[in-house]
Length: 340
Ligand SMILES: Nc1ncnc2c1ncn2[C@@H]1O[C@H](COP(=O)(O)OP(=O)(O)OP(=O)(O)O)[C@@H](O)[C@H]1O
Image (cartoon, rainbow, N blue to C red; front, side, top):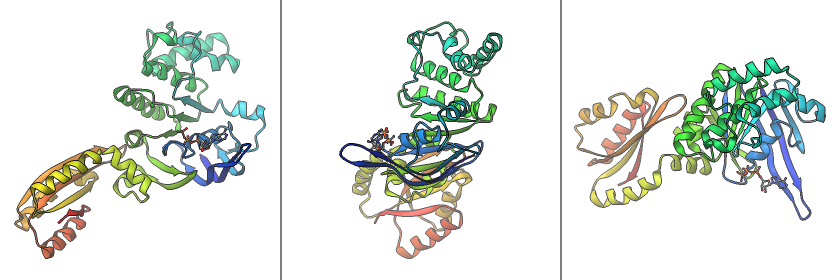
């Protein structure tokens, strides 16, 4: 569906050359919600702009639904953008046009007859849940409603690919989740492929199938979201995962726990998928006759599976610790010693 092959983008400014995207290769599958996450300046915006020809690569090729975007003429790009649509952090609505007129705008440009435009707009209004708001102006809408207009407008020409540029970054957490749910819903209903960029791991966890982590223009890690959470490899991915599960709070709590259980071994158990629901922990505790204090735990839901952590304090010798580590491993539960 989308192939980014050995792509480098260098911005040449007066004083220096800036490598915004550095030899990136990625493949996005049809029907997938693919996330790109990175801190500010990592190169996400440049990468997404390469997908609709708003930027041209310095090196490498970008192919979207079989057409090579890199090297297209302006006319070809304009046509292609009807099939590769985009939504933005600040919505980019036309403030002097109503909701219905905003959604109708791309159809007018594409020369769609009025009657057809009207029925298509009505359909899109229903799809994004904005019935009754047709004649409001953007200034009369909440942030979430504005983004719904942005989504409806982006879908008006029935695109195959939707690019989302920090589409929920200006929204509060509850509205973010509503818009994310809408994106999942339309992906299924309209047979879309979504590429989104974000600096929030929550967005990746909530809706993406796979994600790439960017740092300094490079993709440092890519994979199914559950794997990034379960087994992050790079330090930047680890930071994003930790922030999402509020491990900072945990670090503070851990200091207090260590003080409260000075002679205990404190371990962290990590479960994925069905293991989050199985009674494996109580079984091992019973089998080894262990004395356990449960300290804290949480389970998070990703697009595909749940995963969770449990922190426990044990009075245990090394031999038994090795045995239960092996026992947990057999059941796909990872045991890590936090402190002894
Ligand atoms: N048009 C441009 N001219 C010169 N440098 C640019 C241009 N666009 C981006 N850059 C530089 O390229 C690097 C990557 O920027 P980019 O906007 O792609 O990162 P980002 O991950 O999207 O960050 P943010 O979330 O802050 O937008 C930065 O160092 C930025 O200053």
